[in-house]
Structure formats: C-alpha cells, structure tokens
Image (cartoon, rainbow, N blue to C red; front, side, top):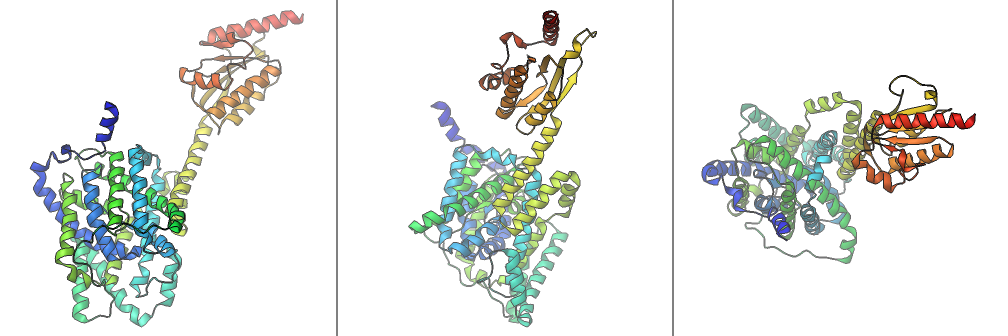
Length: 549
C-alpha cells in the first residue's frame, strides 16, 4: 500500500517543482512573457488552420498551457496547440464538424491520462529516429500546404481533406488579381521573420511580423479577411453534447489524437531535458499532465494540446528554470483576451498563414535529412516511407508503418547476425570423430532466424551424434524454442543422438516449457561443459561401432 501511494505521488504536483523559484523568478518571468508573445500568433494560426477558429486556439494555449505546466512532468515544457495536432485535427473537423472537437479533446485527454497512470511514458523511446524525422518532415510539408488556401484568399470549405489536393484546388480556383494581396502579406511576414531571425534569435519574430503586416494592411486598406471579433473574457466551462452517433464514430479519431498528443509531448519533453540542466522529465507524469490539459481545454471549448517544441525552445533560451515560466506564458495570453481582443481581431488570416509557412519550413532541416539519408539504406527507406505516408495519408498510420518497417529491417539484421557454425571437436582427432557434428549457435534463435538455422543443421548426412552448443545464444523466443524441439525430435527420429551443452539459466525455463529438454533421448544428455559432452559423444560412437561388429 505504501509503495502504490508513493507511485501515485510521483504523478502529482509537489513543492519540489519550485525549489529554484526563489533564485530564478526573474528569469522565469521574462521567459514566460517572451514565450507568451511568441505563442500568441501561433495559437491563433493553429486554431484557424485546424478549422476550429482563432478563439479555440487561444483558449487552448491558455487553459491547456496552464494545466500542463502545473501537472506535467517537465520543468520547462510549454504546451498548447501545435502544427502536428492541426494535421490530425483538420480532417476530423471536416468529417465530423467543429462540434465534435470538444468531445474528441476530452476523450483523447482521458486516453493520454490513463496512459500516464499505467506507466506507458517510456514507450516513446521505442520509436526509431528515422520515423521521428520522417513524420516531422511530413508534418512540415502538410502545414505549409494547408496555408495555401488562405495565402491565395480562398476559403477552405469544400476542399479535400488531403492537404496536397486542397492546395492544388485552391491554387487553381483562386481569383488571381485578388489573390495578390494575401500573397504579398504572406511574403512580407516571411521576409520580416527571416530577417529578424538573422539579426537575433531572441526577438519574437512572428509577433513583430504580425504587427508590421497588420498595421500596413490597415493603413493601406487592403481587402484582406481578418480574424474578427474575439471574446473579451475566458468562456465558462461547459459539458459536451454526447449523442449515440458520436460515441460510435469518435473513439477512432480520439485515439489518433491521443497517440499524437502522447508522442509529440514526450518527444518535446525529452528534447527540452537535453537543452537545459533543470533536471530530467517524468514521462508518466508528463502524460498525466497532457491528458488533464486536453480534458480542461475541451471543457472550455478549446482543442487538444501537446507539448510544443518550438515554444519550449524559446522558453529555455529565454532563461526559464521552473514551470513558473510556462504558467506566466498562459497568464500573459489571458491578459490578451481581457485587454487586447479588439487589436487581435484585425489581424489578417494571410498574416497567420505566413507565420505557419515559415514555421513549417523551419521544421524541415536539410542537414538532418542528409544525415538520415546518408546513414544506412534501411534508415533512409524508413525515413522516406514515413514522410510520404504522412503527407499522402495519415500521421498516425505513417508512424505505425514507419515503426513496422524499421522493425522489419531490425529483425532482418538480427536474423543475419544470428547463425550456426560447425566446429571440430577440440584436441587431437580420434577415429569416429567424423560421425560427430559439433554446432555452435550464435546470436538469436527467434522466429526470424529459426528456420534458417534448422535447415543449416539438418543439411548433414552420415552423422550419428549432434552436439548443440548454446552458451553463445543471446536470445531465444517461443518460436526458436519450438523449432529447436522440432530439430531435436527429427534428429532423434533419424537415430541421431542429440547432446546439448551450455544452456544459459535465463533460457532454461522456456526450453523446458516448450519441450526441448523433454525431446532429448536421456536427461543425462544435458552438459554444462564441452569436454564431458565430447567424451560422451565419443563413447557413444565407440559403443555403436562395437555393437555393429
């Protein structure tokens, strides 16, 4: 009981989260305000791009950002709406409507919360690096393509849920004389952001670009669609409308959203931990925090949230030391709702598209792409397949297929590294040794290698005794043990005596349970050392020779 209560406490907030606050509060305050300024245009843009609206994006950044900061497992992680979530959420909004987002956010949050309680946080470490980079590139491409309708002044309604097709439809259906104004707005945002990033990485480039473009559009009277009126206070929490049809159709999308939220949040937290010395992150607590964040966001009318690596990086570079900085970030955004809603209302949609296009372009690193493609052929194939499927079909499917392809190559490499080698009996050769076959099985005897090893041993004639050396066997699974049983049984049926030497203690249980030991002709045919096994084999050959005379 004591152990379980301690386990539960590790998933909950505690005073140790703020031990450095006395020394770091100034840095945390500055970092929080800075990242809040950076997060404002991104929250608005991700809300618009996902189809739920700028208001929902802002609510998510405030509510989910605050809850994840308090309950999450990272000291410096900043959470909110992200580009990856937009990629998954936008088709769901088209298929199920905006009204479904509240319920999906709550359901996905519950799934992520349960994953944390069940201690599944470390499973993200099993995702191979080429898969991570592949879907990162795919996400960047999709985010960029999703902005083309707004960039050419075409609404997204009626377009395909596939970003590639929707981008082509928008480009072909645009009113090109009228499209020059939003395109010019996008271009100006991109130029300002790129120039400011060259001057200093600490400047909130996206925020400054939004201010410049919004002022310019207002002064010039450009015919641009704007965000429009926003609420001047945070809405009250409400319960979602639950219908029987929703309960049948939404669990699938909710699981997809939950999988993405868990993966992206844990990857972001892991990267954040490597960027600063503020201590390691608790993966399971991070899932609990992100689950609670999405649940809270859903009740307030927001969208599912994840850890945001770009905002987290800004937070770290700005001097954050504790989770107080992420809390300040949410409070700064809350102040925007109460004090500057009228100002935000006149921001052009095209300006937000420009911010996201630059953000998407930065997600695609030519250096990392070259590193992956030049590593190994199998890693390059996994990377390319994951990226293509992400863009063409679905992010979660892409991750699953990427992991499956990576696992296939890993198993093939493991199978190739495994083998069986025939050795000569040690010492001077004696008469009859040619009828003794000594085989050493190396590496792994599992489902990917068992049949090949079986064929290798069976391919010998004129043998009366087979000695199997298993001391170099590193891994054996049920398929390998079953195949070994079939091998021993087949050899014994042909009149070949099988001796087994050097079973490791960790392998003994599975070999006993699956009949390897029982298939031997005699229990004494198990040996711990090679010399007694060789002596027994030679005595068997001698007895057989005497019996045949």
